[in-house]
Length: 273
Image (cartoon, rainbow, N blue to C red; front, side, top):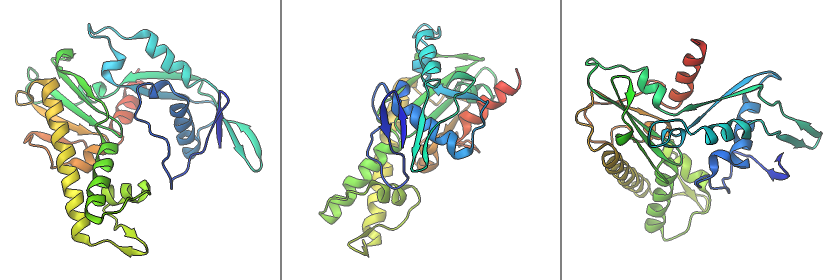
């Protein structure tokens, strides 16, 4: 159990009872606890620096200037203490000595130059809650072509998959963890001790992926106007692995470290300064 600002949270792999798809998630206690849990899992030392990100549209105002108030708030929220409560007793988790806040997707775009430097480069970041589109040309962000698709990512695909399965089976499936594994890892779904027909599961999975990919593609192209003029399109985020091959973008390429693309780009940037 984790406690922060008087609020208690339990983080386990088998259940998901908290929905992270809400506007204030980046500054929430839930976000702080999830970051603290991840740091504990990897064994963060007593003294360390933390790098976190904000979507490009949150990091910058429409005129291209950084949203300093939000950046400062994001920095400070991860310096609020989190306490671990176990049967052996309570302990304070390490607090980062310094928190760096960087824009998501932008550094990835800057580190992925095209063959023609005059052509724009697009990064589509498909996360759990949202999908972000970033377009960079001649080393500058084209804010008129960038944006965020709220409530459209892996979680939306799981929701659609659940609906498709329930329509085929006529029963509600309360265990989201099973659906998550079935959609992402293609694990078989068992209900009442028996696997559902593979044809039902595969058709529901195909239907869900096609629909969510189509919604993402239409949303991305609405923000970016078109991707046809881009030298290439880089797909990153956990959703990129799930939806690779679903988009009608012949010049799209999956980042070799899609899930950790932002983190690796941030690390490379900080190590070079």
